[in-house]
Image 1 (cartoon, helix red, strand yellow):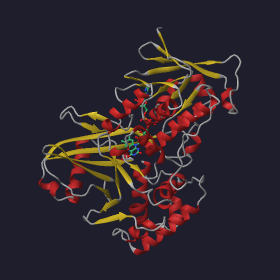
Image 2 (cartoon, rainbow, N blue to C red; image 1 turned 180 degrees about the vertical axis):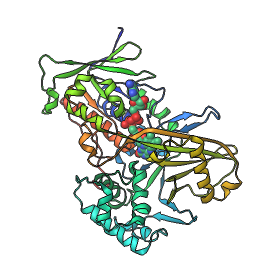
Image 3 (cartoon, rainbow, N blue to C red; image 1 turned 120 degrees about the vertical axis):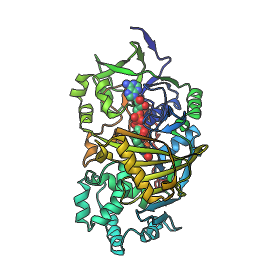
Length: 474
Ligand SMILES: Cc1cc2nc3c(=O)[nH]c(=O)nc-3n(C[C@H](O)[C@H](O)[C@H](O)COP(=O)(O)OP(=O)(O)OC[C@H]3O[C@@H](n4cnc5c(N)ncnc54)[C@H](O)[C@@H]3O)c2cc1C
């Protein structure tokens, strides 16, 4: 085997170039580590990335990604990299029902949580009693213990919610935010979504939409920053497995008991047959890949790894449609009583091509339906919602399903999410699925990367705080 040694001490190999790996690389590079970032694909960004459409040559996001005001670590990463100007805040959210009526959701100049009170009262798709029920439910949610995580649906039913408030309020917000249907969600992350997004701070609910494709967002400036900080990016290189060995005489470098671990990584074996060695490693791959890269004996003997097998995926389907004319005026719409949950108006992306994207989160119901069938259902729905669709010509369409889009936020899911400081002495874990206290989001991924970098810095005897305060904690 040929061996390529990562240079000078201290070195770190970050495996996986999604947002978790990027955040870990950024955090460590800023503290003097020589980082090698290894990514299996020929692009950075992981699940938050674009592909080149073979027909048009245009960059198309695998799925529209949005952030929210409460995502402070994601915002911090973008500011650090000089990318924050690519996000457009949406101070208004538009809720659309099949009868084409729209309710505008915007904040009043009152302190949280009163700032959204008038917006809720104005929702045309809820009765006055529904609104009272919702306020009662939100107050009960805030009073719930932060760690309590029973199944949400019975909890809602026990807290005065009816079918309409569940379908038209709770499910509308939570299915998109958690990528899971309301019958499968636990209370803990439902509480987090409403508390952080809507109740705690005036800016938490503001949705931030990238103004460029994700391939552009995580493009030139990111690469420039990484190069300027001596981060070597190796794309199109997959790690086959980590070579882990038992240490003869484990030594504790810090108070962290796991740093006395019996295990150390001594190399990352690459698929091309070469090896990459470093002082430290960050494993930042999706949870379903961990068992391929970590040796079986470690997976079996260390509970932190064994438990990852309990995580299960939830799919997202996105339907991309290019019409020959503008079919909607709103920048986006949150859809009530529809198949799709969000429709994004991306405007005229090429001469005579008006692009809209419909996102169906937790898209299990579409499993088994062919792409043509899904496309037809969504176009029919848009035709009812936006009359100009009927007269427009559909130039192109694409249906993309990510079967393992995110982990499923089922009740008690956090018991299976490992800490970033792993039971292997010189390995940190990163990824939206690790223990971040957040659901699977770009914010969760960035938090995990910062926490992984913190774990390595701590084990090196140089503890540093990278994690940013939550909105309202500043
Ligand atoms: C369809 C869809 C829509 C979404 N919408 C939103 C949204 O609107 N807002 C939001 O906040 N979040 C959204 N998410 C979630 C968000 O994309 C993820 O939470 C986040 O990007 C995860 O980042 P990550 O770095 O943890 O994992 P990933 O992005 O999966 O990165 C892991 C990386 O590891 C690489 N890799 C895997 N195996 C190897 C190997 N053997 N060697 C080297 N590299 C390897 C992969 O290629 C990948 O690039 C969405 C996700 C999907 C799929």
